[in-house]
Length: 166
Image (cartoon, rainbow, N blue to C red; front, side):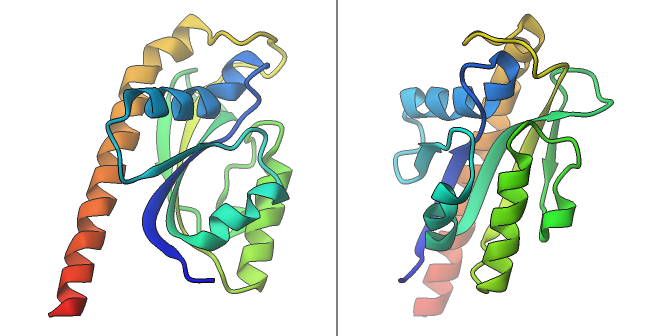
């Protein structure tokens, strides 16, 4: 199957577990903002192999997920993992599924370029659909960073397509 030259934004997380669902909250807010009409935005839930088709069908994927690390809650980092081992060790509850999926994509030689925004959270024990105030305060910056990266990648793809046609 031919890959979609567009960009995929994929929010990962459990919406019912507060801050652990920051990726899903981000995807839903981006969908509501509708500022990226040519970019597919997907609520990927808790990840896993059912997302494999999205990874196979796109050349560039922007992932958003929570991570448990030593950073202040609300810290946003951009990582460009190339291998499963490059993903943060302390990603949220579903990181095993993502790591396994990345290993599978590498074995099938279908690995897209992944840009991973990780947001540091304090705990995955919290339950509820609301984000904590610390993570909520980080959301405008996260939305801006994801949008800017998506627009930059989209411009680069248009330039590359124009150059290929010349």
